[in-house]
Amino acid sequence: MLNLLILAFRFWKPCADIIAKTPKARGCKGPPKPLAIPTRSRWVRLRLKSYIWARRIVQGDIVVWLPKQNLVIAGDMAFHERMLPIFPHTNAADWIETWDTAFEPLGATHIIPGHGHPTVMPQVRRYTRDYLAFLRRKIGDLIEEGGELEQAYYIDQSPYAHLDTFEELARRNAGFVYEQMEFE
Image (cartoon, rainbow, N blue to C red):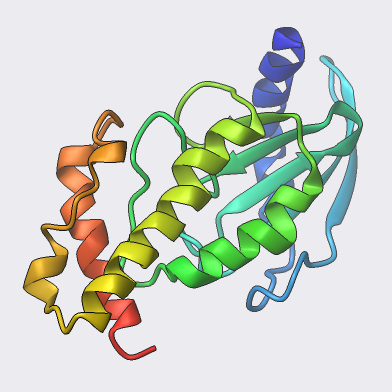
């Protein structure tokens, strides 16, 4: 299987210009219609589907699904070795919804995240979807108690402290999620 992952990764770069022409999905109302690209290379012949799900982390980031290989090249949809970054344009609730309605239902066994080594769905779920849900729950509790933005920066995120970039991103992520949720 490792050879397949290496081949898929090598395949990604030559096809990036083709994949970039994939129509953008609007919103997060489930999986958009994929662009199927039959491709022949000197390494392998693959059939793939690419998705662009709006408002996750990097607008326009591509997720590539290889159904026959049960493999997804997740881009910035999935993280597991480093803490995911949340930006002002990132919508954590939409990210969770997209995960639940489009990404995880793909049923991929093997995941190549945008950062880190190839892994499996339970691992990226734990450090992506579950982290976002954890952070929204903590911030929601803080807002219900009348807490302010300044307090959001200090919520306990210690279950994720072992991730790379935790020190750089945890407080910032909490602040952005607070700003999103403040007026929900």
